[in-house]
Length: 326
Image (cartoon, rainbow, N blue to C red; front, top):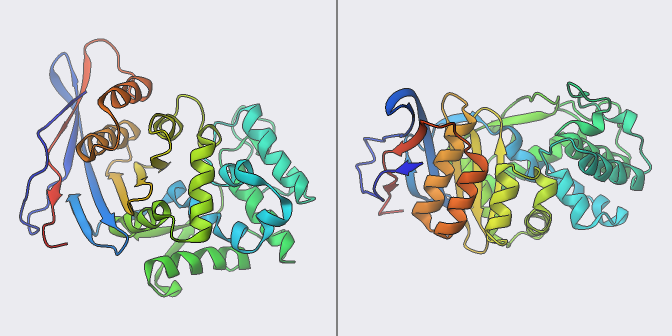
């Protein structure tokens, strides 16, 4: 994969997206437009490509924040789930026996049954434990059980556990909870429509380690990256190769979020057409420009996640704007 030159300072009135171009035999075949926002912990945009206010659904990149009530309620501590239980609650996992067992253990410690999970049974699977969102659902159930909230309707947007998720996200963003557009995700749980700058701010907070529960969540994800996604998957391999310095969580339809641990910087990426390869190529571009990974680690990550056939290449063009007055 090739990249254009580094940062440039461009007028904020002329935002330019990144373009990820797939070429076959040197001829452009597909072009993906990608938005990027880099924010600090105060929500100030430091760098961007495209409209920083672009609104879209955060999808599974919300999961670390959906895990907040699991910790703040005391459920995770009472159950003594440790970092493994917290990591699987944030996961978009591969549905392997390894992942399903971890979800089962979380439910068992809460004295709950897998039949109470309301995420779908995946295609070619035989249990909701194998669904990639089962850890999140198990944490919702465990929190509800601990708080004596009903468990049969834990996915409803007016259920106390979902209300608490929105309340805590709103608090992190400095907004009123009634400002959010809340819709159903593919797994049945609510997700939020946010501006990219808001997603970047959430991840800046996640990596800053100044919020007790967020600090626990980031440490757990980095301690057990294989639970967060799975071997060969972008989030897992990036966190492994960063040696605990970069936190990564993606979502469907072209969402990718990153955080630099200890620096209070967050990144939100959206491929406008929902392309996975485009968001991953853009993430590699950002990691290179921000120097968050060594060149050798970037090369390894690219080889693991962007597998292209002979004669096919990906090129990222465009530039990140530097916001001088942020």
